[in-house]
Every structure is written in C-alpha cells, then in structure tokens.
Image (cartoon, rainbow, N blue to C red; front, side, top):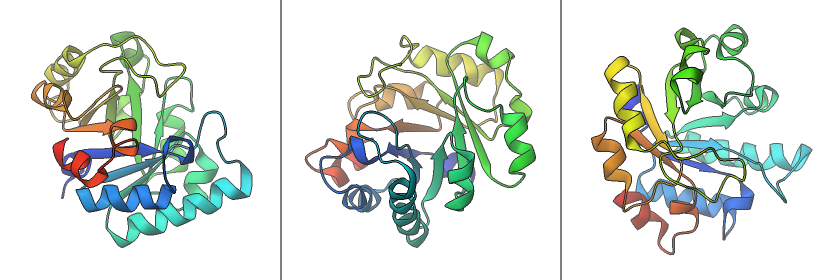
Length: 205
C-alpha cells in the first residue's frame, strides 16, 4: 500500500477518548479495518510520564502486529521511544522542517486550516496534510471554526499528489462528503471510540 491508501481510515485516540480499555478499542477498530492510528494522549485526565509511555508501547505493539501505521501526536521524545512510524504536528508545534532533520525517515503530518497556515509552512518536509476541522467537533476544546470539505477541494486543486486527510467532526454519515471532495482518508476520534459497534463504525467510514 502507498501512503495515500494507508491513510484511508485513520483513528486518532488516547485513553481519555475511550469508553473501554484503549487496547480493546484499538483492536476492535483494527478488526473493522483502520489503516492508520495516531496516539494522542491529551486532555483532562490524560496519562503522564511512565504510564503514557507504557500505554503507547502496548498500542504500538498492537499496530505492529496488524501492519497499521502508528503515528504519535506532537511529541518527539515519545515518537522516538515508541519507534513510531511518524509524527503529526499542528501549527503551534515544532516545525516540519526541524522535525525532518531529527527524523529523516519518519512520516510527518501537518494540520492546516487556511492558506495563511499553508504558506507559512515548509510543505517540502511534510508527507501528508491533515485538513480541518471539516465540521464542528466537541473532542478538541481548542478546535478552530469548521472549514468544511471545500477546504479539501481547494488543497487538492493546488496539491494534486500530496496525501490529504480530512479531520474534525467526521462521522459515518458525513465521511463520504470529505472523500468526494478529494481527501485520501478521514481521521476520526469519537465516531469510532464512542461507537456501540466499533468494527461496524469503521467499515461505514
């Protein structure tokens, strides 16, 4: 699979997002067909220090067993200690150019929500873009205003070959709008972690 295919069904999750044990949630999502996983241990009640690393090691091992991409959210030390496949950063995190120097071989993802953000970013160091938020979301307290699938369409017109993943407020009901706008994949949190039937939710994305 090329990177675009490996980003098709992208689960973002930490322990605070789950109704059940995080490893159970991840296994159920893999059963449903996720192709990429981002370990994002943030928010109120999130694990810290050794516990955060231990959970990361367990989730990393599960992804490795099933050949699912394992990405770490915005933590270079964690990405290194977990031997992650990649790291995903936002606009206020370390720059992709600096990350590329540290991680010449890892996948680097960058969140963008406007042309202003795109123009100030070093896209030459980026392997894929996280475009969003697509729709309003309650998962991130500091989420920006939704930019909608039209933002994916605009990015795709300018960057025909760069992998693009839609993120933010995506559900089984609206994921098709994001994909038909030109996204290669959709990234979700609660649409999967809060689902009664996780494998079914993943299949519907």
